[in-house]
Image (cartoon, rainbow, N blue to C red; front, side, top):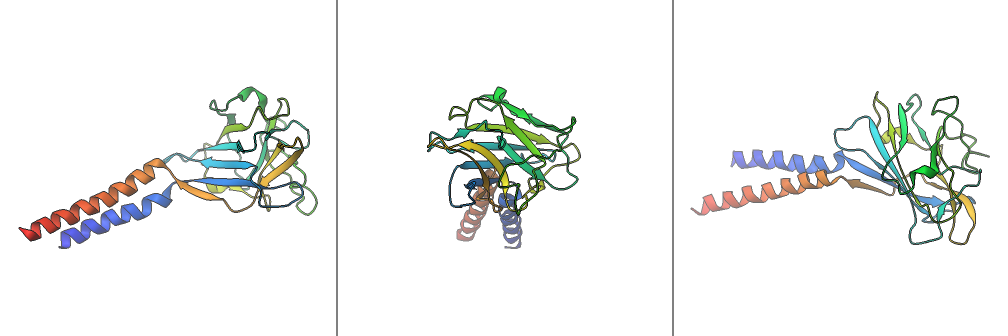
Length: 225
């Protein structure tokens, strides 16, 4: 009985701790330029592989349900602009090869440094007042043909999902064209929409549950004998 309880505690602990240990953060681009909320212009997903402490992959996916939505080249904003924790400066920012059309995106730099001052009105004007520190520009034609951007942010001294912060009330301002042909900046609110455990985390979680079931069955069989 003691052995069973010990095994149960170990496997239960594994099942309980594995799922929240590694998760993607998904933000919905739900705030419009007029600061109205509740929209769904797309999403921004932060992903970090288990055991990786230096690189976060960011996917900006514009809403495919509204086929007119794409990145805009208006000069009023960027394909995406974001902030990191003070003092956390990336070693590199690179367009991921999985991006459907990587040639139309350019990582913004100021004086050879990624750290800059990038505006995306109204999310960096008025009461907010703070420009974003990092940005990727869109240099293609304004229209719905480009609606996904994937890029990697790397810091050899260490980078975590929690290093991506609001500015001060919004995450990830994005310059888009809508299904009606209007161009505007949109952003994600401060609260992530979902936290998605990695497949490995789910696998370990269910392995723990299966292990518990097997131990219980063996215990019942031994008791019946």
